[in-house]
Figure 1 (cartoon, chains in turn green, purple):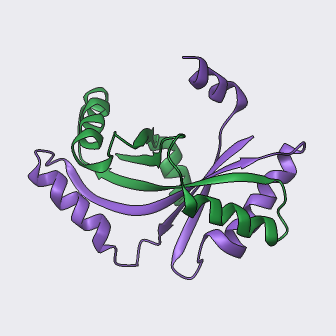
Figure 2 (cartoon, rainbow over the protein chains, first blue to last red):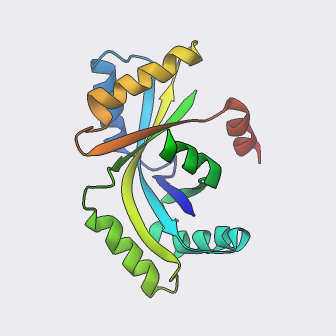
Amino acid sequence: MEAKVIVELKDEILDPAGRARADRLNHLGFPEVKNAKLGKCIHLYIETGDREKEKERIEDMCRKLLANELIESFEIIHEKEEQRQAKVTS
Amino acid sequence: MEAKVIVELKDEILDPAGRARADRLNHLGFPEVKNAKLGKCIHLYIETGDREKEKERIEDMCRKLLANELIESFEIIHEKEEQRQAKVTS
């Protein structure tokens, strides 16, 4: 299975790289962009039989390596097998 | 509204930073991780009335600034208002 982990700075932490992108988008003709945050996406390719258990394992990976919880928050997106196959065949 | 843009290297492009994370996870006790790709996530805060039109606008932002389509692919995730509110209140 595949999962994506999105790691981004917590709201209270200054994010100049995100602000720079929002400013640039404003200048490029997208005034509707009010702010932006730049984070990381770690796309994991996992071989497992137990989908339920895997969610806990991925949270563990985030805490141990992928995110720094002092300043970052993380979100796990599971790609459903059906969606993934649809994407590959389309 | 909010949207997240995930930008990652195309499959055929070498991604040593992703590989390094997969190796490290293996060493930390997660042998089920077969590979990983490290990408960016740009979280956009947008003020707009027209949700349908906004999808096209965000694609346009990706092509003009956020992604380099020679080596990167992008994916747009719309946060549904209901989901977002649920997250805030939970």
